[in-house]
Image 1: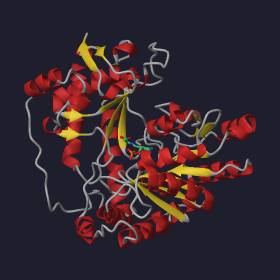
Image 2: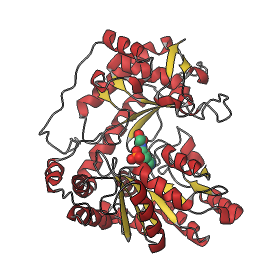
Image 3: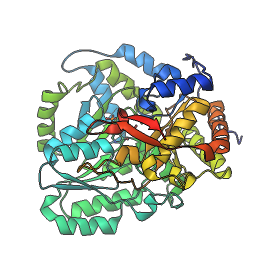
Length: 454
Ligand code: F0G
């Protein structure tokens, strides 16, 4: 059969409250045109993030009932640890309440003034934790990763030459080498197994530990299976194990590829580093057999990890994105190609070339998409990155709109509805006006700032 279906039946549903365009225009005005300020009940399809927004399976809900809430030595932790090490063969598994908590603990060990940490592209919370420790964060993604039209199969790859030069130049100032799979900030683009291995080899040549931010590891492994020579006949589990077996540790947001609504972990092989991490964990998150989580969360994650490597699921997941990207591309709407793992990215700078980047074209697209279809997306452009530490304003490198897909939550008809909303948006695109920011906090303004239409 050619039709790729949702490989699940729906047992429990969450109704969507339908709204009219007039109502949504009013809600957006009341929210001062910040989509984060909308109530989720006023959103028809919520594509703000794929983090913690997925649907748990019947088996996960039943695992929740198995949760043992003992403070120390809970069997839920043993089941969680077994599920993690089955895929990622690390010696020490340290649960945290989400990915950024694992990053904070890691940076309490590796960060500090005068240090500099390379990655293909650090996610914002990783960068935030590095910078908060006084260290610097450096992105060394291949050039194709920054070109929305390049069809390179692994646009998330590390630039190995640049990394070699970086390690040679910075020497002792580099405490650790990181890589993010898939590369979220670069459009959910994958990293090849070959590139992961070569990055590990370079890190080890310079005697640096190599840590993987593994949030979307299963999606990354699916791309490796599809696109990398010699990987086609291998299981997702085997590919995942190969990716992590060359690393010295990992950080993880279990809100992505562990089907969790909350959770994360830090994994390490080195005993001394793990001891330091556990001391910090006890200070900030909790005892080492629960971290920042309840026993029931650990059981839900253990079951989620068994489910995420299912190929029918991964095929449906990645195909949904590719389908929307193909349809928008055929309509002439500039999209980041090829489709990434967890999100569709619209290139608003190319779609609205006449709009001043500091009038926030990607934000204008995201607002109109909400008015037309009740679809909530996220601006990744000059609203998010424009304000500089010295107070000046500078356009971001790209003006993107991210439509991130919650896991197992929406169906093909939702995908068709999204495409139809873009058809209408294209009819209206010449009428789009930019925005001015009327009020903003000192940092991370995109979450809470207020806008006025120009
Ligand atoms: N690393 C990557 C690559 C991520 O995408 C995220 C979160 C984190 C780390 C932090 O994990 O949220 O559990 O603390 N990304 C979400 C997003 C928020 O919408 O892309 P967390």
